[in-house]
Length: 370
Image 1: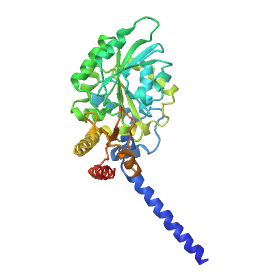
Image 2 (image 1 turned 45 degrees about the vertical axis):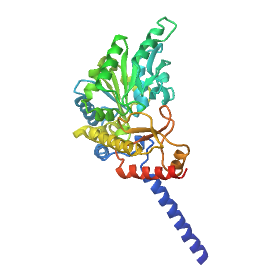
Image 3 (image 1 turned 90 degrees about the vertical axis):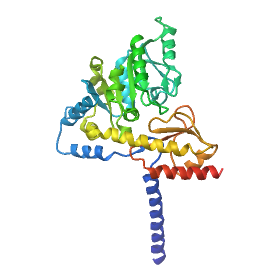
Image 4 (image 1 turned 120 degrees about the vertical axis):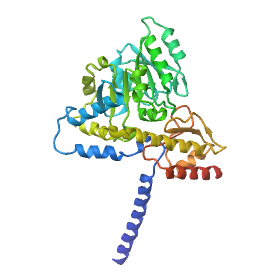
């Protein structure tokens, strides 16, 4: 009996050690994506406040109305606002609304709608074709767009309908106000609607310290997919139609696609906490500043090569052979398949200086151990 009791105690100790190890791994902040971060306190509080009593379903509630009104205040314009579960739904459904199946969408070859949405834009638009152009550090090449548009205009080729850009880009760069104005002018010149994938729109606004209107509807954007998940909410992005006529019957499209939440307040309420008192920009500025610190630390290594300008909350770096694997073996998580090569290190609203210095310390050891 004593042997059994002793064995059980040893087993309990072993389980405790494993649980502690797992806990440490789960608590570590990683650099794979700002999606890895939890819910920020302000969004969590708003979510908890919405969890009292009953509220109307399907978006016909006080919280959804207030969140939409706050978005209108942020952009200083009347616009139509819809909440969906994620960025893929926001992009795909808004693009499908802008297009018929015989239309085409022009975007860069690194765009999220091309590389990371499993064909969802084509699926929800019943076959609208994506036409790809090369990019300049992730930004659309307007000369290439014009070449694609003018290459063919016969009935045998899908008719160009939408120009889609990403702000911040998939390579972490940010369109300036003049660059966006040029994009908007070119879209109007070519008769295209302008769609913006703004999964990290908050980081872009923080990076160039502009009014949100200046890099959206004032630059000619017709519809913005405004990301909340990467900035501190638990789920849910907003589809913002600045061209209100384009939003006609969009609610039906959301319902058909399974994107009309019955308890919509639990998607929209966290936005209230984010938008009040500029919390969304506070968190975006913090994430950007942590990326700036990371960039500064990485720039001190002669063995590394920074691949793209650091403008928002990501750093793309080429690591020496074997170094990435050593870091992965130590439990760090980051991607090496996003963009056009190298490793992407992404910071979030909850990244700390200690997280940066810990990664840099392990990186230094990994380089020395080659």
